[in-house]
Length: 263
Image (cartoon, rainbow, N blue to C red; front, side):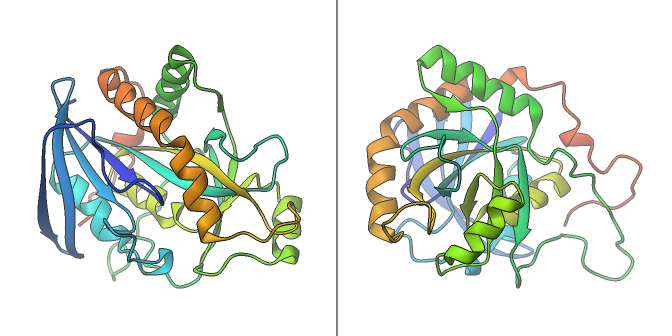
C-alpha cells in the first residue's frame, strides 16, 4: 500500500511527524479540498483536517463527499480518522481512546451518498461499517505501544453544531449508544462507497449532557484533545508503518457486481 490517509478531527490539525510535509489542494467533482502530503516509513500520507486547519468549518457544513473523493482520486486505499466524542458510557472516560465498530445516524441535512442521481441505484452493505482489518491493526498497535484503547463502541452521530439535550442523550443510551459526536457520518459510509478501508479512533473529550453534572463545552473538548495528542499521533504513525497488513477485508470490493463507481 503506497498511500495512506488520515482525517484529523477536532484538535488534530496537522501531523508534525511526517517528512517533507507540504500543503496542496485538489479540485474534485464535489468541491476543492486542501490537504497536506508527507512521508512516513516509506509511505506517502495524505492528511485532511476535517474542520480545516483553523477549525473554521462546523460539522454540519463539512464537505464529506469532497474529502473522501479527494482520497480516492489521490490513490489512497486506507483512511484512519480521529473523532472527539462525548461519552454515554461510564466505562469510557475522558482521555480514553475508543475504536468505533457501529454507528447510528441522527443527521438530517447532509449529502450522504455518491449515488444520489437517477440511474445510480446502489445499495452498499454496512453491516460492519468500519474496516475489520484496519481496526484489528489499530488494536494490535495500541497494545504494542502500551496505549489503552476500548475495542468497540456504538457512535451516535448528530447533526450539530449544538450539543445534545439530556433527553436526547437518555434516548441514545436506550438505543445502545456509547459515544456521541457530530462528524463520523456520512464520512464512514462514503468511504465504503469509494471502496476505501476506513476506521475511526475516537478520543473521549467530555461526558455527554446529563452523564456529567457539568455542561459540555468547546473548551473542554479542546483541553482533552490537547492532553491526548501525543499518544494519538504515536498511534496513528505506528499504524502507518504496519498498514501493509490489511489485505484480507472486503472494503475495496464493496461495489463488486455493480457497474457503478463513486464519482
